[in-house]
Image (cartoon, rainbow, N blue to C red; front, side, top):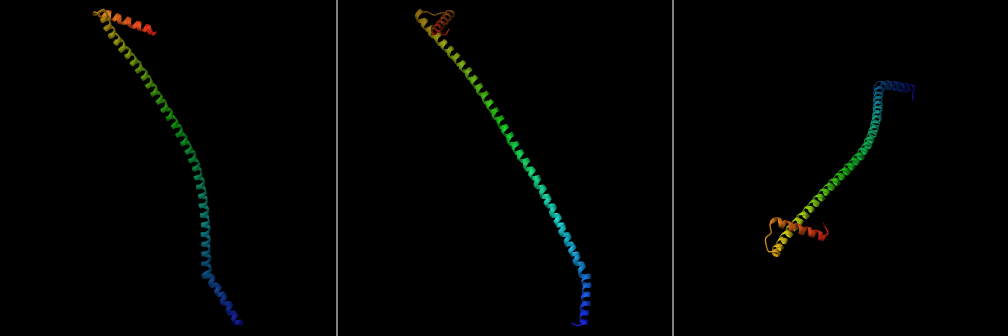
Length: 162
């Protein structure tokens, strides 16, 4: 290589460097700066998104704890309401049973009284028929009542109930 070739190569290299500096270096550095800015923005966005995700996860965790507490509260309230209803049903059933029992006792007492009245009437009719046959005559109402009452009293004394 000769001195002229070397000089030509150096000048060509210098011109090429100036042209590259003018036409290529500025656009390449601008593209690189834009790319660096985009990467920094993406990293900032990723950090912000990660921070938001972390906050959202903490918020959901707190809501989950509150939901669990609410669920426990709802279950407890439901149990208490169920127990109250059970007690009300038992009380109502007991009151109804007591009412039925009292009504049954009253009905039994009334039936007993009706049976005693019917028995008394039957005894009175039978006594009158026997008295008519024995005495052979009709009795007036007062005499008849007196005989019946005495007979019933004697029956009560004989049974030991009077």
